[in-house]
Structure formats: structure tokens, C-alpha cells
Image 1 (cartoon, protein in one colour):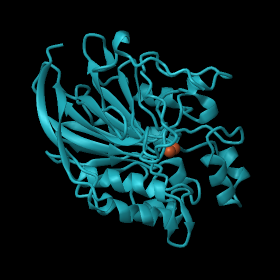
Image 2 (tube, protein in one colour):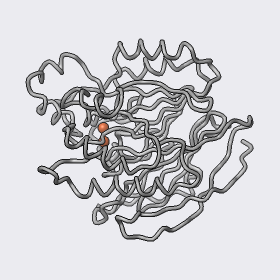
Image 3 (tube, rainbow, N blue to C red):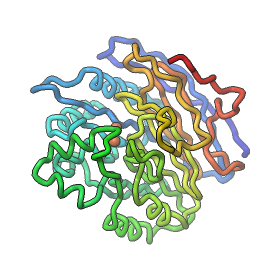
Length: 358
Ligand SMILES: [Fe+2]
Ligand SMILES: [Fe+2]
């Protein structure tokens, strides 16, 4: 891999609301890939889980996460071409929560591409989201890259029938992490047909980026870090030379390579989930190469959370995780290895030793 290193200036600021002065700092950005392609940057934030308590009162900590991310994104220099919101803007899919989220997001100076999460969907099955926010699935082209947004959090009809007369009951069941009454996420046959049709017009050497909420592979079923028909989506993407899937939902740094597809999980602005390996009763498939975040500090409300930005050159993504209260992480596709690697911590000698105090 013939990498060259360039620098960009990034202004990190907590914004006026946080009463913190802007602090400029530099990030190392790795340019990779042999062919010279058009380069662009976009940002990613996800999983804010804004929760209404009563009336205009919302959970302050979750508001703070999104507000801080928006303020910092407005200081990105150069500006990102757009921002992807990866889903779970709301906690229980209420109109008040979605409206509140849109109000906080309206401070953002960049266009937004929206992905729906299960917390936005299961109260009214995406009705208000489609009215006020975005279609549930769509595609667009940007500077030579084909982007596809999927609604990956659909589920089985039989399970839906159980909750037909109780929308909030359905929402609460889907909102739990380790709920045996839940139901696996899926893209569904209808959307798969749409996806195959959408991709028909795209050449095999056009880079494809898929944006979904749940991972389009199977990590851990008991927590729904899982998409039931992931293999069918992977199959539809098989003929493309460069495919990247970006997802939220798991609230942690994860990366994986399955066949021709590179998968990256992005951070939550609200809270981090633990890695499923900590839940040893059941088998899990956290990718072997993954280097875990440090254990978060329970006394620090922003630890283990953050947002990210990506640069795309020659159709491959470089992912930068802007982890609040933790070291920033950068993960790129290594052409020689054919999989994504952490640019600093991948070497086992450089890894932070596991913390064993419980
Ligand atoms: Fe989430
Ligand atoms: Fe989610």
C-alpha cells in the first residue's frame, strides 16, 4: 500500500452552549489507493436516543450529546459534503422526540442524509419519520460513489401482528437490548427487490456505500446486533469491487470484512454499549480484528460516545472516530491485507491491555 500522509486542520469546539473556546488541532489523514480519485469528506453521527420526560422536558444527557456533536461538526474545516444521521434519533419514536431531534439538528450547517433506526420506527411504523424527516430507503450518487440507504430494522409480520393494537407495547419491546420477546431485524423481500433493481444501473467498478442502522451481518442475536437476511443483501452487492457498509445501532467501534464488503460501525452520541464478548453465556461473532474501546468511565457521562467522519478516495473509506474523552481512532482499508485495520492500535504490541478490575 503506497500511503502518503497529508494533514488537515480540524477545529474542535464545544460550541457556545458549552461555554468552551474553540481549540484547533490537527488530525493525520491517510490517503490510500493507487488510482487518483476524487476525494471528499462526509461526517456521521448516530444514536442520540432523545427521550421525552414530560412536555418540553427531555433527558438532558442525551440532548447534550447531540448538541455537542452538532456544534463540533459546524467547526469542521474543510466542511463535510454532508452528514449521515445513522438512526435512533428518538428513544420511543414519539412525535415530540422526533420534532425535538429535528430542532437540535436544524443548527447543523451541512445537509443531512437520514437513516431510520428501530427507536424511530416501532411506534407508528415510520409514518411520522416519512412525513417530517426522510423516506425509509433511497439512493443517491455523489462524486462518483453510489450511496444506498436501507431500512434494515423491519421484522417478521407474525411478530408485528401480536402488537397490532398496542403500538407503544411494540415500541417498548423493540427498545430493549436483551429482550427475548423481541424479533430479529431484517431488510425484507420487498426492499431487497428494490435494492437489486436500484443496483442494476450501477457499474461493477463504481464504489458503493450502503447506509443502514443495524449491521448488515450477524454479530450477536440476543442483543439484535443482527440482520436476519444480511446474506441476501451481501449477495446483491457481490459483483461490486468496492463496497462499504456504515451502520449505527451497536454504539461502539467495530469493523469487519466479509467477502468484498467492508463494514464499519459508528459511535453513538448518547451512550456506549459493551462488546458482546463480555456477555459470555452465548456465542458471539465480534470480528476478530476488532480492538475494543477502553472501558468507559461510569462517572463521565460523555465517555465512550462521540461521532465520526469519513474520507472517500478511490472508492475506499477512511474512518475517523472522534471519541469524546477518549483517544481518537482511525481505521482504513488495508489493500494488502484486504480488510480494515486500525492505523495505530492494530499491532498487538500497541494495544491497550485489557482492564480486568471488576
Ligand atoms: Fe441505538
Ligand atoms: Fe438501534
